[in-house]
Amino acid sequence: MTLVFIGMSDRQACLETAASLVALPPFELVLDTIDFWRRPKILLAGSTSTPPPLLDLVMALNRQTEQCGFTPDTRPYKPHVTLSRRSMPVEQATIPPISWPVDEFRLYWSRDGIGTPRYQTLGQW
Picture 1: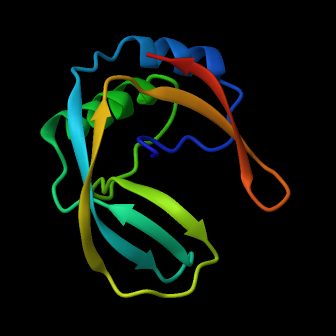
Picture 2: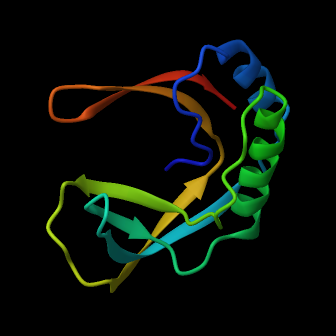
């Protein structure tokens, strides 16, 4: 789940310092919907309710990454997990709740692989 999208950057050290300044109280996220974003053709699991600690985490990370020269996304944060790219359209639906305990966050480096992106953890807090 993306908290803050950085894109390509050569400022890893600054991002690691920024992330280390953010405290994360444990909380639970509940994924309870399936949805489809038409333009990028992405099938995703989402949440009808965003826990306040998750919003606080995203805002804190945005504030800290600004110190590294990044501009925060101004759109409202919508937690989601990408299930499939280049998916066929589906209607939004409610699913049985999936509880996701959250007690850490990570900085990932992603690069395109053959068929799927590859991710490497650069740090976790």
